[in-house]
Amino acid sequence: MSIELAKQMEEARSYIASKIQIAPKVGLILGSGLGVLADEVEDAVEIPYSEIPHFPVSTVEGHASTFVFGKLSGTPVAVMKGRFHYYEGYTLSQVTFPVRVMKALGIETIVVTNAAGGIVPEWEAGDLMVIRDHLNLMFRNPLIGPNDDRLGPRFPDMSNAYAPELRTLAHEVAREQGLELREGVYVGLTGPSYETPAEIRMLRLLGGDAVGMSTVPEVIVANHMGIRVLGISCIANKAAGILDTPLSHDEVIEITKRIRSQFVALVREIVSRLK
Ligand code: HPA
Image 1 (tube, rainbow, N blue to C red):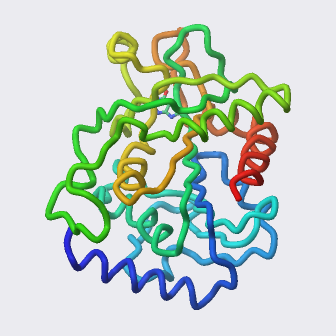
Image 2 (spheres, helix red, strand yellow):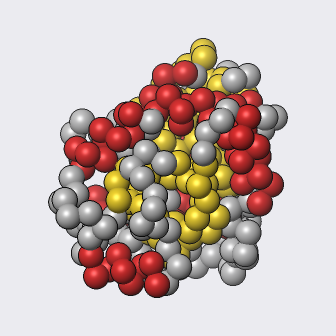
């Protein structure tokens, strides 16, 4: 990270600001299969990532890769439909650059979502989980390099990386909606291969409840910049070795489709209360 980063953020921010009327308060990052929430945005202005200065160029065909700005349940939002993953070959500064740009646009809170494998044996595909904390098993950190003190501290505190009051809010809303909401520790690995059964047994011993290939870098950068984070995982499958069946990305997408109406209702209502 360098002084150059602040300049790039400002160029991306001013490009976006020239196209939108609202001042987003809440950012949302939508994970695999969860992009439908972006369709609920009112007065939507879509800006493809490819148009935005300094955004990484996406190489993957068929992946949604656009920002949607507008109002969700009355709250001005910046929605990332599609994110950048480390396993695609981006650096972690590229993966997390959009979070920095959302902060530059004025967001104070971010809702980070993902599809994850459930490590807790009793959890079923289709469960939703509030992230209480994470294990960074990517063994790399997006903040490595010179620190720009204007953006955040050299050594950011991560003891409440997932804001307790937002977790409480998520549980309140879920209770009102009659939705069972799990809570647990998200383990971030690089992927792109899924885990082996032995790795899943190890992650369980280490205190992990769900496992995925995203989220951790974005949450570190959000904390660096003082953004409050709410994380929600859609348990898309039981992790490797819990069942006898192989994992497939198609299954992950299928399950996220099945529960997306509950997911949409939950996140919409949470966002409406984040004024
Ligand atoms: N492992 C890692 N990432 C995932 C999984 C999984 O089982 N399911 C969805 N994303």
